[in-house]
Image 1 (tube, rainbow, N blue to C red):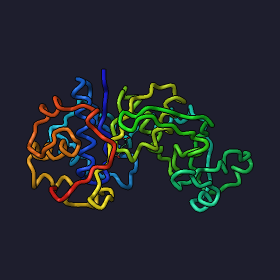
Image 2: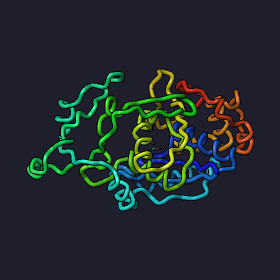
Image 3: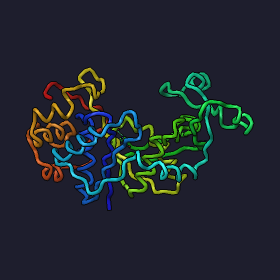
Image 4: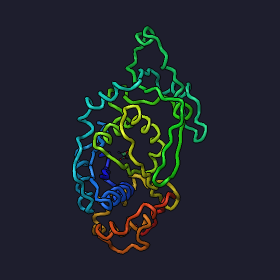
Length: 297
Ligand code: GLU
């Protein structure tokens, strides 16, 4: 059976971009008679708020995007993530932000920095001499990780050459998103992950974690981002596109009409029901180019 999920972070009110991703995730699952999970990604205690959790559930329901089960809050699962962490080849990293920057090699293609492995081979005595609380990195392999994204096609990355050992536990003890998301999706039996294409470059790291933890790798669909007419990403700061505003201006079926037209499912902005959209939905209709949202909204 297909198992999909919504995985919103409760760090703000949902906005058009989150809804767009949520709608496609929901349509994919419902068009295959699958199971939909809701998981609140409140890993970051400083940014997550109960009011946003309540609002995002209410917003999804208002739009008609239901779910079959709710997974535990990520903030309650530290022990569970810790068991996976214990199975990984990790080491403590004491580097400060500045040291990281100085000791990293620039990424060949996009100017990002690759961790140079500074703390990988410290001796026990060197570790004991450190004062800073460490973050924990996982040793990545020097081989290509490849997968076929349902929208972006064949992808590959050599983690050792293009990413470097990455953090799986922060110095404040919070497990990193990369690890938590893999543990949770594996635990929920998730078979397809639908999310924004800003996370496409996290996927090789996550696939490697699935492999290292001996868990089956789901199918990934990275959906295009919604952008403003100037090409810039629509941000949460764009208040006119958050759900409070959208709900004051549109009925659910009107908003579904706009979203499904942006997705290329309908070719018009007319109101449409979730049931009609399930009939119309196919991944083949979804392109990979950024989608420009104009003044209509
Ligand atoms: N919580 C993430 C977000 O709201 C999504 C993570 C994921 O889907 O893997 O952007």
